[in-house]
Length: 430
Image 1 (cartoon, one colour):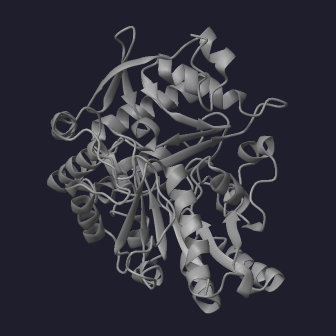
Image 2 (cartoon, rainbow, N blue to C red; image 1 turned 180 degrees about the horizontal axis):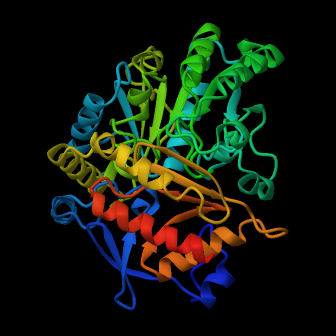
Image 3 (cartoon, rainbow, N blue to C red; image 1 turned 180 degrees about the vertical axis):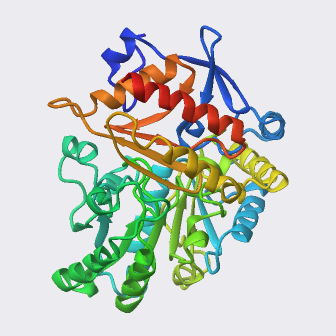
């Protein structure tokens, strides 16, 4: 097992007690020993339609036999155009243009580059500063880790991009512990952006990037009105607003996108994961009409954006995405989280009072159970829960001492009961 250097993994620890998944169907994995593992986190926040869905599997196989690859540099094939139109119809107006990538990390770096180039195209090339947020996760590209705010993702790799600053995060367990849905306190934190505008001058700031709900940092929710206030400040000062919806996109919060659930439309939106229900790597950046139009002013024969990837709009990824969108539509999965939200919330909060539980957070079909860390060993309790839950037949996601949950959108009440029963047993034992 030495050759594969696993990502975001304590490799030496993993090899002592491997957790190896061999197959998947619907709501479940099977490990190499044939044990059934209930999927409590949609793979890695991505398998929104569940696993091995026939329509998606068949679409990928059919496409591989028809057109396995086609370049999209000054060439094209039909599927990216078809898919872009389908996505445009799902997105809030005026996010009318789609640039395809291969991951959430690439989507973030793409959006940041477009933001910088947009201001340059408009004659405001001095707008080079980017604003992220503490505890944010925006992938692992140099742009993403620069605007991100997770120290372990940043400290190993040098200073990152210059000219980046960060808002404070909205996690406030002291005032908001065990909130049901959005936390009541913290809207004043949006004023951090006004403070940074005064510090740096608005004329130097290109964009603000925010996760409507931060997933990888342990499910951090916005207080009511927070995102609206960020939007207002950006509008006042000519700053682009980017929503990172890699996790919240494609039904996770009961609407196609969190922008629609919260009623706040950004200038760009980064997506991936649920776009293909995790079946083929793919991401997409949605851009407002005004951004696209700013690049369409030069000679017709001039390349308007010097950016892209070999696999942008890959035929297999497009086929998988179109089949995933069909599955979401046929089964009502993009809004199903709203139907189950209250049942999910009630079940999660029933874990209050379990040993070491200091907070529970939820919205849509996302949940987090935060634990008090062991003295001198932060993260040890969380890892023990990850390992023990797997042995008991449940896959969860752990960030430090926070257990994060985001089941496939095909989840039924009986699955929710099983997820929370196993987690409850594990909490008692750990």
